[in-house]
Image (tube, rainbow, N blue to C red; front, side, top):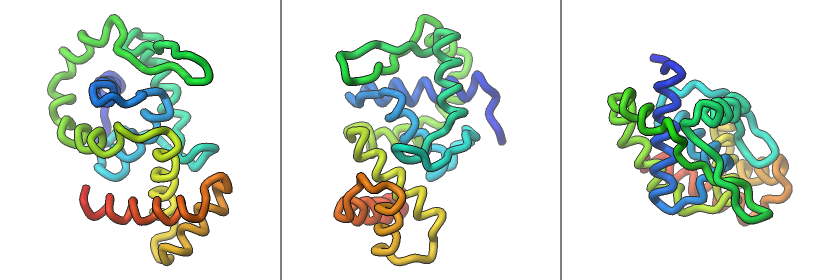
Length: 178
């Protein structure tokens, strides 16, 4: 069943807070990649459309949602020193959103925590590799791990063959454990 907008925002806020609590950078790239896994792998019905973009799976809808959350003061950007982008932190109205949608947050809390436990310590470059490998694994279900790694390198030449093979192995293990 589809979530309504404020419910979805509450779940995203919960995800961002748990990422920060786990000492993740918690910038938009991190939120994009972990939301992709949360939605697709753990089947949380956030209903964002993801495409394979410059740095892995990306949702323009999710980017718009984050902007909407900023505009409504549920999340706000905290600037960091260059060259890093802002971290996402709770806005002034975050507590109100969490209070009103506490049941929705609780409903997905275990799945959010599983994703946070797995991905919070990772840097953006690793998240890109793993999310790209997962994306390709969904498209190319019947190919060998070596062929999948080659496909990743072809689509993302900045990912080395060794990194691609490691990402394919990571995703295979991830699918069997989550």
